[in-house]
Image (cartoon, rainbow, N blue to C red):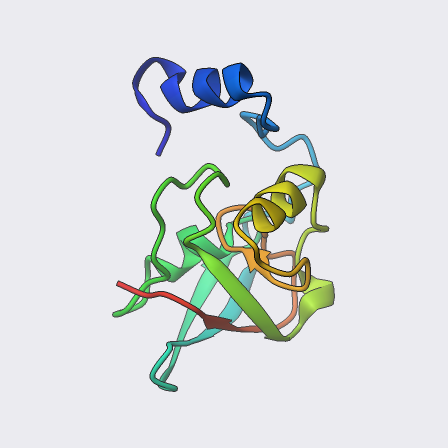
Length: 132
């Protein structure tokens, strides 16, 4: 969820940090497509749901009993990081803002941010590092 008056974006600009784009200009998957998503929580339990194509992993996980945790939903905090176990090719490509946030928080580029990675098709399995 964006902050009131875009405060987070303004602070990032003042500090010289990368500011993620507000919208996604990439070609989204058709919204009518239902894509299976499996999320393994930190305790090892797997939760599965169906989500519309083009949804972010974070939005899709809201359908689960234990959704992926997020502190900002705009790729600045790194809380929603996940390890892709299967189906990495079925996610949107990682962009510069996502890589910058991962690096800023000391995480490897091999992780993905659930608020940035969009479902594009196939079956995707991820391991969430934090859940609600």
